[in-house]
Image (cartoon, rainbow, N blue to C red):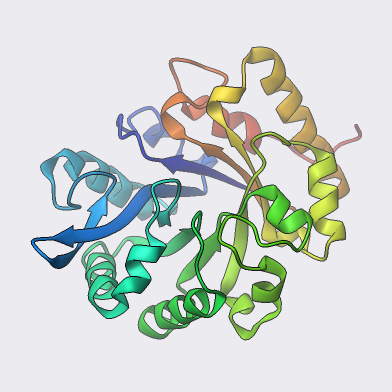
Length: 265
């Protein structure tokens, strides 16, 4: 079972660096696209990826990758990215490709599509990434739970089941499923019953929704999921800087979830 942090508020990973055995994946968030003086430009949050404010983050994620933690780069989210990306695909994709070629420790992309796009554009992007970076390049997606519980359009306006069953579906290593209002075995069951295998489904939580009491409930829910689906893909937290239950040590989150083993409920 993978433990995964999204990492957007770059507070430093010092407390995590001594517990890297307990974290499998760190997802750097988030890439966006825009125009600068009329030319395509890539941004990490609100700044250029080359901004010195990111030096520590790049260095620490590089070091983490050398100790077998997988580093992914998220594209999109609430701030968007894909409508801009596809409006000038070649110009914007070139910048993303160059960033990935420079930061060689980034092993894949997390596609968080929260704006209306065409399914065929998503498939084109996936094909291009695999063509350029090879079959071992990791592609994940971050749908809201309802997009996998049923076969509606979701925030991206396309059908995830249609994508999953298409030739490009084989590229999806797992889904980082946003279960922010429904972090439960019941939600997980519904997704599995809709045709997705447990080894493809990571259940996701949002830090701010959890205090000490309901965090214990979250641990219990994951224990129940693990008992019922031993091959469950994992659990993620959005995001690292305020990961529950400790206000002082975000690394405690991954240690507690990594400690969950198969046992009777």
